[in-house]
Length: 77
Image (cartoon, rainbow, N blue to C red; front, side, top):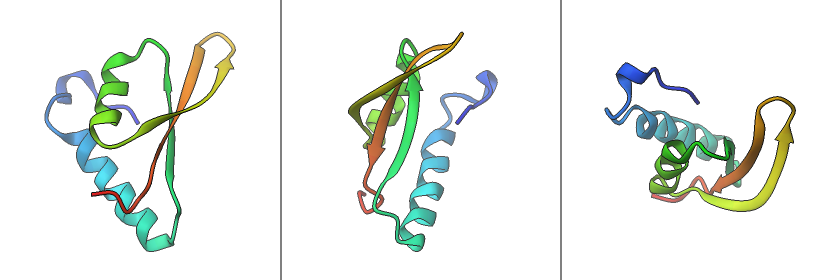
């Protein structure tokens, strides 16, 4: 997910995650996953505030750095 800098801080991330959570719930998904690059602390904090937790899984993307996996159960409110 990417939000333009001029639109950040307006709750758009929460709105997007809410829509994804609803779609996942309707589809019967067990969880929602995402990746966040190390050093992108602002995004990680947003995801944590929305209920995501780090899974301990990560991978290195050549030329971009390490990204960490986060997970959210779609039934979480």
